[in-house]
Image (cartoon, rainbow, N blue to C red; front, side):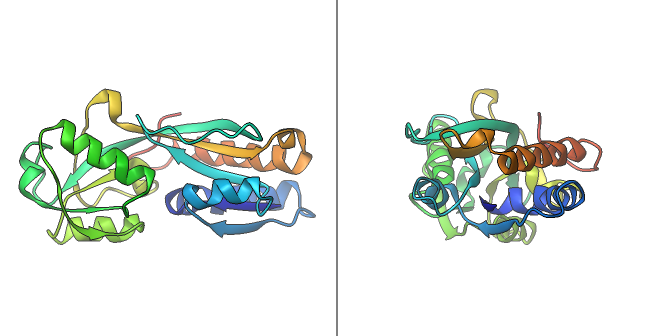
Length: 209
């Protein structure tokens, strides 16, 4: 079973999901690749993966090829992280760290800033959200960070809510059409669902089912 998953979902969900799979299906071989949705979903269509854990941002829907089936996993709230606890208007004058241009996250973040009336000064680019959080901690930048980053631990930066209509990304699993009935796919999806449910019992900010 070949699975592609992006960074924050991999860190928060995979350890528990793999433990559950090992206990319930010891004969199932699982291979994991960390990959962003922009590359993982086309690779799924090309049969490089059997299941992809991906994300979708408000106002920036992913292409939905006819050969791909999606199943929602959970909603993950996004928040403004800033060195001094600034709100979005006050953060307009700060340096920013965002994911690279061309990613869904970057498009969503730029649109949100422009809707708030400013062009963000993006001085740092990284898909590594742990690096982004460290830059905020050290006072170098503001960022938009998902609650999933803090699963199991207390947030280390000041967080502010975002407008309700644009404040959540959707996490989903994707398989090739007809693949959802495969026993290995069903087992992996069950394990991921249970890993998400387990997050509700951990401290820190959590995704919303």
